[in-house]
Every structure is written in C-alpha cells, then in structure tokens.
Image (cartoon, rainbow, N blue to C red):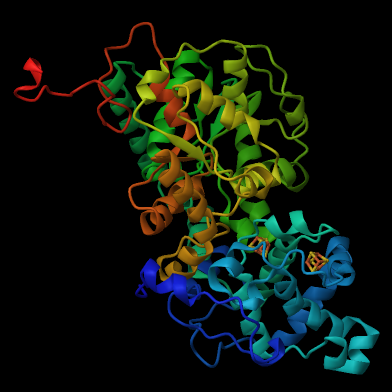
Length: 546
Ligand code: SF4
Ligand code: SF4
C-alpha cells in the first residue's frame, strides 16, 4: 500500500491555479496512491471478459490488443448509436464552467482535469476527431485529438477519478451528466481489457459465489446467525432468520457489506430486530446474497448479469415483493435499471406494507421498497414503540448518499427516522450546500474502496469531511449516519483521517437500539456493546458527599 500523506501535508499543496501548459500537452503522472491497480487476468477469465493479461498501470506497455484503437472507436460508434444522451452531452456543452468547482476530486486535488468540463473533454476530443467534420479537418484547432495510448491512459486515470456521483450535473444548465459518460468510458476501457482489480475481483467473486466478498452460502448464514445470537444477548429477543424459504411474502436483499464488516453488521442487526418486532413474513436468499452491484462500475452488461439474481430469486421463491437494505448504488440500479434490464417483474405484486396497508405506488414497476421508506411509513402510522433515550450517547449528522439522494430523491425518509429514534436536539444538519441533492460524495464510490488508492480517496472525500468537521466542532456531533453500504465501508477511513473520533453508522442500527419489545430484557448497552447513557456509570469515591 502506498504511503498516505498526512492531512497537514495535503492541505497546503492543493492549488487551484491554472496550469502552465495546455491540457492536451499534460500527461497524467501515475504516482502511488493516485491510481487503482490493474485487474488480474484470473478475474477476467472467470467472467469471460476479453483480453485478460498481466499488466501494470506504471508499465510503459499496457499490452493492449493489436487492434485496440479500432475496438474503442467501434465501441464509441456503437454507444453513440445506442445512447442518444452521449451524443447530446458531447455536443451541447457551452464551456460555461458552472460545473468546474463542483467535483469533490477537483476540490481535493486541484487537478484541472478533475473539473467535470475537462474530464468530459478527454473523451469529447476523440469524438470530435473521428465523428465530427470540423474536428476531422481542423484537428486541435477544433479541440480534436487523435486516440493514442497516452490518451487511453489519461481516460483510465481520470475516469477512475470520477465516482459517478452526478453532483456536477446538478449545476450544469443543460444537465450534462458526467456520470453517464464515465460509465460508458469505462465500458470502452473494459472492451480492451483495461479494468481495475478492486472492481473486477468483487464482480468475479459475486458472479462465482454470490457476493462481492466471495462468501459461500454457509459463511453468509453463519454471519447472520451470529447476529441473531448477538441480538439475543443484548436485547433478550431471538431474531431467527429463514433462508431460501419458498412462499415467504417478502424477499429481503442487503448489500454484503452489511453482513460482512463493521459497522454495517450493526445495521444488519437492526434490520433483524425490526423485522422480528413486526413478525414480518420474510426470507433471505443465499443466492441473491448481494444487493450491491460492482458490475455496474465497469459495464452495463456486467451490471445486468449480476442484478439478474434478484428477480430470478424472487421468482423461484414465489415471494410477493422485495425489501432492499441500506445501499446506495443498489438502489439506483433497482430503481433505474433492474426493471428494464431483467424485468418486467410482473410475477411480483405492487408492494403493500402488511403492517400499515400502505401501497408503495412508487415501486409499482420494479416491486422493491427501500428499508428507509418501509421504516418511515411504520413510524408515520405509529407502529413502532421507541425509546430514543437509548441513543442519547449519539449526536448525529446525516450524509446523503449520492445514489439514494441525488439519484433517487430519498431525502426525507432517513431524516424522519433519525428524528424519531434519537432524543430531541440530537440530529444536526451539515451546511445546506453539502447535503440533500447537493451532497458531497464519500470520495470512494463506484468501486474505489481499494487501499492502493487511498491518497486520492482522502482528497476526494475532503469536501464531505470538511462539512462533518464543521458540525463536530460546532455542535459536538459524534456520529455520521448514512443509508449506503459503500459509505459504511469507506467513511470510517475518511473520517478517521480528517475528523478523528467520528463514528459511522447505518440508520437501522439506531432503530434497533430504540425499539421497545414487550418481552425484552433490560438493555444496558447499544447494539455495539457500548454502555447506554446513565448505565454503568460508577459513583466516584467522595462524590456521594458532595
Ligand atoms: S460525476 Fe461526480 S465525480 Fe464525476 S465529474 Fe461529476 S462531480 Fe466529479
Ligand atoms: S456546466 Fe454543463 S455546459 Fe457548463 S461547462 Fe459544465 S458541462 Fe459544460
């Protein structure tokens, strides 16, 4: 792993001065910590992806296929034909610069090619050269350039410094969506065997064994059974789970991060407590064992392949509808892609809460409800007995995950839940230009959790961390809440770097802490085994007399 500079070394070095040389003349510098490693051939072979070979990003020769240029240009033509948005986004940018300072990677690195307008130009310049008459004739004068290996390397460097968060598109007067261009650019790279290890390893593991972490069904079951034991130890409530049960009303699908690593594991314990409280007729599949989808971070085709399991399993188990756990990109995929990729899901019913009777019309097509929508509806109808004082040790702010918020408009539900499960005054918002649709990315989304990439991740996460630090310093916030598994995986590293002492948590964990079961034992700790406020405090000698 590359040595990561300390925060005090990074901050003074960020300069937003225009560079001395023109952008076409500047090549990326592949410094350790600023790029993701190349994917190993074994992963490509396992999913049948082309041009598997051993290569390294720092090699001069990337061992591209002989006809790589032809493959890319044909691929670009194909995508221009299929995605009208791509052509539109290439053609309508007026270089107004409104997006320039909106990208967290630009703010954290000062690199002009991390301005969304210029990131798009890296691909647009090639489009102009080969697909636009002015570019063919006038070349650089018309902003066009040849597709060379250096250009391809530049695409790799900067398309893997875009987390597909879409913050820039919010500020663009034309709504130009850099995320879409990044997705398609990465597909082109993948078509000549240029992929990153972290994403590809997760994809191949998911394809072969069912989840990004490569857990076997037995390992998944063992973990979840362990959470049931933990829930019982803390609350006295048994939370058994059924696996692959045919005829259950609901299939529950969670990202594997929630049953594999802290703090997602506590979120999972919260799901189990909630479902048990409601006596919900649900089951978990060991086949659709992954709600997340790293395939989406390399190609639509791979995203579709991994996503197929969810509907297939819903069909096999004959459930009526699906609840999804706290995940960001899973949610964007399930709402925006799943139905057209793998639907129509006409074998499922429009979700109706068996507790409140609410019909989730917003899920009429894809038949899947986000756990935050489901829980907020329960609270709205007064169906949960809660003791918010059990979360009194927590002062929270909320990070809107790009995909659930900007991608899907889930703004109010998590806030509504937080305000119900925390004592009054324990929820504090970050500054308005950093939340809701304007939220800043965690800096590690879209498959960037890799350790070798840590410097860029810490830089990209700086704007988010800055806002967290603000509420920590001003209001004593000690927890950063989120409804995304990637966030729960990467934000602890980010805040530990920029805002030490800050904890990261899912929202269902807070629900699990606060839920009051009629037959529970007296709780003395939260789900993380931390003493509840007022419990476990010993009276110091001499204090009694004061
Ligand atoms: S989508 Fe997000 S990461 Fe990509 S250029 Fe836009 S703001 Fe930056
Ligand atoms: S805001 Fe939109 S139109 Fe303006 S430079 Fe950025 S992408 Fe182009």
